[in-house]
Image (cartoon, rainbow, N blue to C red; front, top):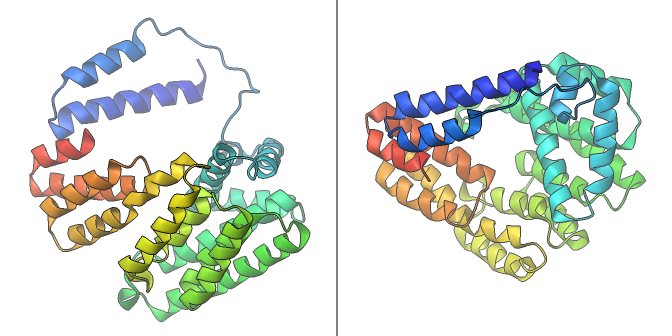
Length: 311
């Protein structure tokens, strides 16, 4: 049995046990799922050529395979909503998450293939997340000038890098969306909105572009709920071409839930995030729900935590 498979089973068992012993939500469902998962599970021999994620290839320093996969993801992403989602997820997981654990390997990968279109796009995404990492998650009035200055340096580099991508590949509509994300941090909101609009002109039903556009028009980013509602109504015309967009109709509810958590109004937060999640799975909704779950557990409200975990 491969190391990856063993680790995967171990993580699953740990998660299941955590549900049983930590949340107190009951054991019946967990036991049934675990029993079906592990029952008569065959020992699988996985070859050295098994397909891994972009993050895993970089962690393993298998840069050639990482480059091969990144090329495929980049070429495919404009073709349909599913390939866009796969590409966006791979960019997020590798360019953001690996900065906290394998940053030297990330930089080595980027340096090795500098000048290649797909890797240059990845490098520009990396710079955006590097800037966000430097800034941190605190509100701006709790963030030091040194952090804000460091963020600005990296995000200005990211904008320049994406502009160069567009010179070489004008059809790369997500480059515009990432410029919009960068501008949301370092420029007037109008510049950010223009960049997201450019992305949507090229791909009107892009989930990634609409998600970013709505995310950075929240009140805490200088927008407002009325403006977000106008965007949601406009987005509705594109749902037929990409049904996944309907999930974003809960974005205002999720943001209100996040604000309710910040002010300790957990009952209100639960109602709001449950309503948001009724529209479907979106990463932001999951993060808000996870935050609420942790707060409820810490407060001793085990029943409330269970309701969130079972949603």
